[in-house]
View 1 (cartoon, rainbow, N blue to C red):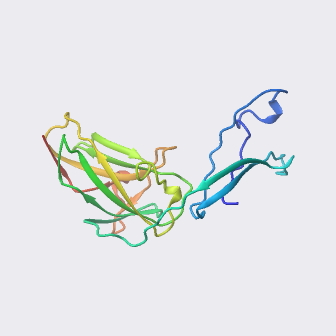
View 2 (cartoon, rainbow, N blue to C red; view 1 turned 135 degrees about the vertical axis):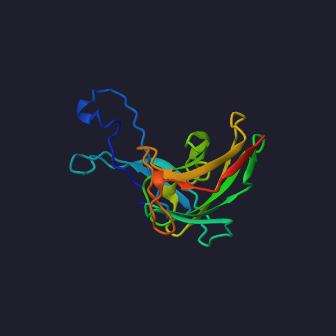
View 3 (cartoon, helix red, strand yellow; view 1 turned 60 degrees about the horizontal axis):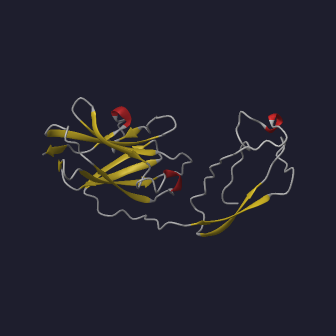
Length: 218
């Protein structure tokens, strides 16, 4: 068994004791597949359990799925800007590449973040990349799971390095001038950011990492 979930058949607030004969219910379930699951075909089963966890009937075969493995990277590539910031002991931001410190309305911001997983997690954290002014107002942003939503943190293995690229449009409403870029990770269910400490072990304010300033031009 490489993945399983134990949950209510339909809704937690609508137990089977309240069901009526002939009633049809829809249950939608998310099953987290272990990150170390080998590539291949797998059978999918469902079973109904009683309060003691004993199956009330034989498991039902639902079909099969295919799991595609990933090529993982454990050696860091050349990184233009080193950071080495720790995020709650789960992830390290090794550094980043910035296509250009000068961005325009036409080209936008192009940025690659290099994360390294330290521990496995069952939470799918989101990355935030914000362009802010000196008052902290956000003028441009991208919040998403890593690699444009295709590689959640739940799939990362300890020691693995993830090159995570972002292209963020710069709106014409931005005045010409200098802006900061802040990045970090947060739990989308709670909105709480992972705490951040720098390479010297000092906690960073607002649980964010400030990258080098960028200059916005027309």
